[in-house]
Figure (cartoon, rainbow, N blue to C red):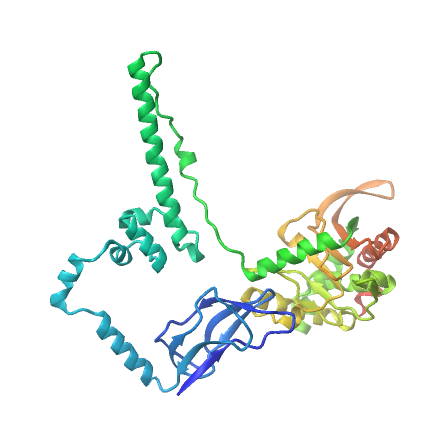
Length: 433
């Protein structure tokens, strides 16, 4: 029985998707629930499991194809008989008889020879162009591919041939000038220019953006183009937080099964400030200001495919343990590419912590349509003045970028000061929940 493999239904905000990487080849057996292919949208990368066990007899869309929701991209034969029969038939057609192999090899055209050598496999168009220009296999190996995964495409062959012809023409012209100068006797013979090897051997690699990276670029440019972004800074003495963390981390982990990190402190402090200054938690919708009476905090997480910002829903209702558990889960699934669209949708305020990578200071970009974002940096021991004395304290520079269209400097500065106060005096009310 043949069954169809379809693209999952996409969310309303996602128009189409890209087939990233098939994990199975035509003719291979697949098991129910086994991942067939990664499907990339502009927000997440989804795995498409096999709906039934059987043989993958047909792949309708190759890697890199753009697809819509519920589009058929492959077919599986659940009986397996059709695939086996087809495989045997194809093998019989492709494999020539032993006595004919030598004869076939002796008349193999250049284009076919290229595909059977150790050189990179060429698509039909590139193979045809290579044959037209009588390129040998060793020449093909020296061509740098600009296609997907470094594959050599037709344009790469044409560029190589054009460069080759230009070099030949330049050499001929240089030789002509040398002969002319020598015959006239009014100039020394031209010497060929010596190009340093370091300049001639400068490899490059062209890789197309993933849909996620294109989406990130689009949103960041949108933020810069539509919002009046301004950033205010403050320094925070992290001594009290670090002392509390050192005091409670062992009992906290033993009781809740998760480590007590710093992000839970940052989230709690941000929520306290947002409650005090609701405009920081607002967003712009046309000519309206939308005041959100809930606190969905976006946490910027680095993943192998790019930056994602999953949402902590109702962060004001979460305990320290719940915040740490959810952040750990989101970070783990971000690394595995298993964040869902729903977890990336919405958000009223965001926090990005560049300090985990050693950042000392930055101006974070607002995640539209939100009105503000908090940037946290590395905590370092620095000399500071306390009561007329210079002492060493663990200091952190905080940055709050805000949309000046709706947020005035007063509210921005005061809200960042409220975050600073909540972290420097965390026992009450920060650590009650």
